[in-house]
Length: 366
Image 1: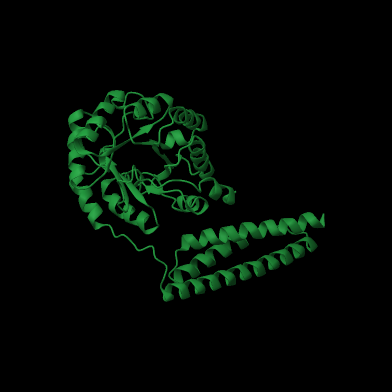
Image 2: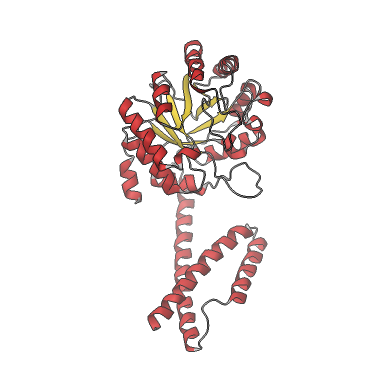
């Protein structure tokens, strides 16, 4: 599967929008929603002054329940045209169906993105892909992760747009919905975009710290964290008067605040040339080999225990023993300065495989 995906996305083009944008990281910014022409233009001019090249604004807003502000609709595209004329910025907005694609491309919008609800619906994504294929525009398309943590659904949406002939293609990580309380609005689950990048290394990855955090104070640390992990760009919501925003007021920042955030970010070197780093990676490789050998030894012991349980007519799963293993492992982790929850996950995975090994022994015996 991974080999096919690497081959599938091998000819993607950089997100440069005509070669004008070369900044690192790529920054896309603007209000959650286009509310009025004045609000759009004021925000755009302020963002242009701090060097932002791509202006984003939601024209249609998919809301959970009717009656909320659902965007100004197609008339907002005229405001995006004025942004281009007055500032020279490129423009970007969200599309959710075939008609959105058509009117946006007719209006000269440079970049489209698919939201989390849309990317979770293969029918909607295919409808958009068909519209893009019919229009045959060299447009940039970004796809946000689905609301649920399903990497295959995310890749499937990317494939549908890629198959429509789009080569300026990228992914936006905006976090995943969840039930219950959490520090952030959406759980990052960083391992999912990291796995996406591993399987599709040519695919540009952009982080949306506004939607992950849900509050403006989380934007800077989340942005830094994403850049430290190799993300190529950021999409951050900015509003000329965030407190009065008609949607997502808490997670939008002023252009001035955005400027301070961007200036505070540290751009890491992506060079791998130091002898010390090479030696440390060799040590990591050796540790990994030793871990695999120890896990193999543990599974051999699990199979022996399985045979012993058969001889004495015992059940495979011994709950009290499992609780003892988890408790002791977490205590040891704390003593060593490690995260006990991490160790709990590790031991749960090991125990699950140990049980599977013993069940195989039982199965073969019968």
